Image (cartoon, rainbow, N blue to C red; front, side, top):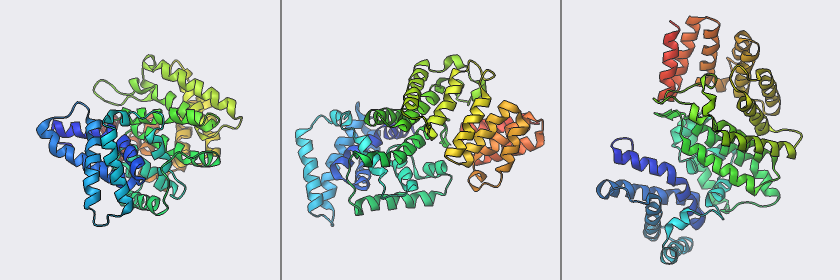
Length: 418
């Protein structure tokens, strides 16, 4: 769906509306796989009709109404039609009769179908990898390929995870609901991880023509704020919210008018969103007040706060950021976190020290196909005037990225190395 303008419009509408649509349908069917199928049927109908009739004024409401109508027909045509599907079909018919205002269903703020969907997709009967993949597919509207890039694994692997996850939810008869009590705490960790993955995909798109997908960031922020209201005593919920608010504050300064990426060090900080910074710092303060032992999200938020408080890149407390990354490595060991620590060390004590850390990560399997690793290494090599090595590393990073803007920028940096 990337050809003519109407196709691009349908794609954009799908990106915005698919998650809420699937969430609403999943609440009715108690089956996320069936809900996704019904939503896809509505999408197919839009692709057939909108090029002739034009995009309706309320595309989300049109998709939901179409999904409901098609659901009844499809469910009753199904050869495997049984009492359960008869009940679902009857429910859709009743809603079509008693709930004509589909906009109201799309604006469900009290029960929040999206939150039910994310807790269902993050149920413990699934592996963490499957939870994240399924939620990115259902909540973020990402394709299988895009999720594969986010996880640094193959596309068939992600496709299998999603299929198995939907089948498992049906077989285990997982309820479509937000858990309560102790179960809520147990499932928060995977929910937070998934929300952060969605945010990151929006903040630095793994593929496509645009470097960012603001709608995904906004959706992750919305889910994070709802979650903070639902679990106000959980410090990591506030930590994640603080991290996302502070990181999102840089959005207006991250791209040039032509869409070219602007690195953190080169950003005009007067364009950073002060409201989001204020919200982020307040959320971080709440997290600190709830726990003297900061978790992963609190530490990452503390790093983001260091950037937010600095008037310039040079005025940033890089030593404190390097220390926080060291603490973060202790709490959640990760090659990617160590990569970030290397860059902070480079800023604090010099590029040679950072490069030494990066070189020690050269054999990490997770970083072999990770464009950011090669781009970071290239940047430090360039600062050390090792131009030929820097150029090779920039070229390697450009070959690995699927994002057009990022690839153009990397190739330009490569050319600057001579």
